[in-house]
Image (tube, rainbow, N blue to C red):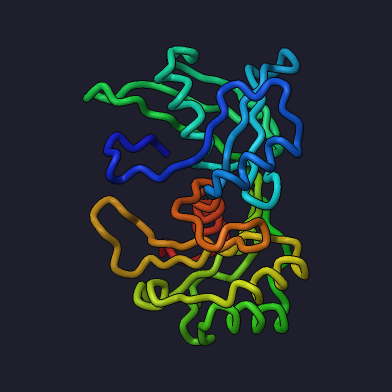
Length: 241
């Protein structure tokens, strides 16, 4: 993943570069006030195995890791001159993750994040799948049979949902209340329908992310779900066939 140099394409994430002295209630209040998908709070290191600690809050809950808020955090630190180019080890709720910062050929700052190795939960049972499809307004035949609907985690789990057609993805108007109730039943608060149909130049896939249980009706960008999708495609599907 890299930072976007064009302001017209930028997706906002909250960043508090020095959160020293803030408690969980303070951070949750700030995240709720900003009302962005996630807000990152940066703290000094707590041990020799990492360089700083970052906590991430959605409007309604703390989350272990966030992709685009990680990119935003290290972009801000690079712009402010508090971060040298190279590798930084950030302690998160998903463990210690490496972040790499460099400059591209045009002088723009690039930020690359590492995620945890993928892990896979048991697939949704028949009743849970029916509830999911009903909440999304998707028929069984609109799923891509080359890949399973499954819960995948690279630090923060998502339900990965392969769709055959891009038009299906674009028309989704999910029942957010139903998705929130399903989140509690399956222990996963993010739903990521995606498709490989009709790719654009430079875009291998298209996806949308819904996490109403933590206050995110629709996440405009989600690097963590991108990691979950990557390991899902590589290890458990025939989508690359």
